[in-house]
Length: 190
Length: 323
Image 1 (cartoon, helix red, strand yellow):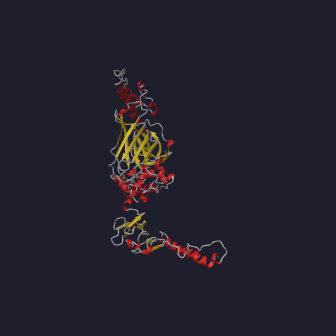
Image 2 (cartoon, helix red, strand yellow):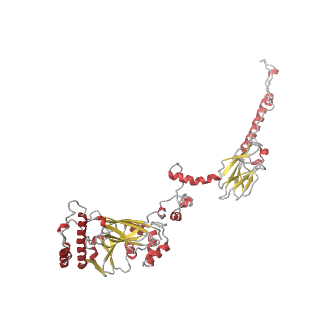
Image 3 (cartoon, rainbow over the protein chains, first blue to last red):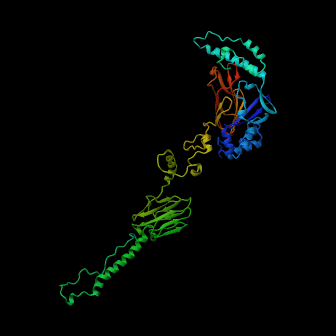
């Protein structure tokens, strides 16, 4: 996999990360095949299709040419991915080393970022909703599992969801939030 | 006409030498004039005539009489025995000599040097060639004509039906049934006769064409793309995928390298859970309704809470027609 990716901010403040594939980097730089490496490559039809979904015509033309002839530098290949594979209404598009990305995806849907770019933060309010949903999911999963277990089918999961909801509401940061989890469900993920 | 070599008998040779009783007498004396007349001269005449006839015979052997080039139809003559009739024109018809005139043996060759036109050789009068009134020589081909003094026969004639051999030869070579080797097999060298074109692949109905690796993917049954994505899109293996967009937990965008013809294509996606500690059967990967010709949104959902969730891997394949 290429060691860089494009980090963007969606209109709702959410974060999208676009990972170029190894194959496209190879083709963009070394070229594909006249017939179309992946299949029929009708230049006009391909360009029309891309323009139809909001990609600038100049970008579509460069993409088709690169698919056949290659010739892009690595930097130009990343630019091509940025221009073609990220939505036009996304903002703050930056090329990041993949090592800079957060490795913990527990609160992935709470990742937020400025429209001007910059670091990825966790929205605590959204993270609290995620934490409660994961606890509820773990309870449901464990309950479902026990229904088929010879010894446990009549022993319900002891978890006071109202109690956990209050604890979640009072959490002051994501680290405290992450520690809120039913002891009985330690081995169960949300 | 007929036999190229004419046999010669010795003439003037005395097979009855004078008697000799061994005595030194005038009657027993050997004279040079007598020996020359009775022995030397006949042998000399014989050798010289044989030499002349051998030279004449060589001229009548195939290849011994040179080449006659013609760009027009030609009546082969009795003096053309041993010649090659080299034919350069288009649509020519040559005629054999009268077999009863030239008699057996008589041989001549015909070469059709034209690049594309066939050449006809017609038997003299009602005389046949290989039992037919005429034979056809393919462009670039040639053969020898022999007679039995009544009709004509060929050797080395490449029959028209054999032209279809080339396709069978290619097929046999590919399947390894023969050791025959041909030029590198490609659409250009086979001139489209044996290798399926892109259009034939897309139509998918031909049963007399060979699929080449560079075009097999045009067939409707061939996957136009596939991808395996790990939980955070950190590792992706793929075909026809330019990038993976990580838009949230269990929510990926597959950006296709080559767009589909329309949104009327088929994508199958499956979540793979190897270490999630909950019930894996509650997870499904779904294709969102924002399907586009160049992008596909895949969302993995846990049906217990209807929330999108990261699986360990997401696998997908796509079939359809490219733009």
